[in-house]
Image 1: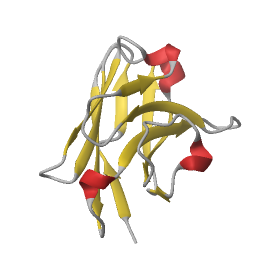
Image 2 (image 1 turned 180 degrees about the horizontal axis):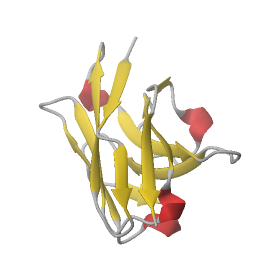
Image 3 (image 1 turned 60 degrees about the vertical axis):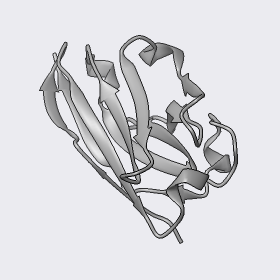
Length: 124
């Protein structure tokens, strides 16, 4: 059973930056593709970014391309989401997810494990 713990959320002004971290335990991290999702109040969960097992492939939702970067450190069992040029519409609870699948999938149901989430609030 894989456990995922997110950290790094907080309150930031528009235009600022945050780096989210997700530490994994209980499994072989290098065998997991990883993703970040977010859910804003009153909205459905949304795919944000994903990275495959060896970091060769990354995928992003269009609204964060050029601003967010997903990366992973397999030696530290950790995946990161660097968020720059933050906007108020980025405000959400951000969730880390892991899949035993090979691909950096954008589909939530294809992820096997989820973290508890970390709140990101961007003020205008």
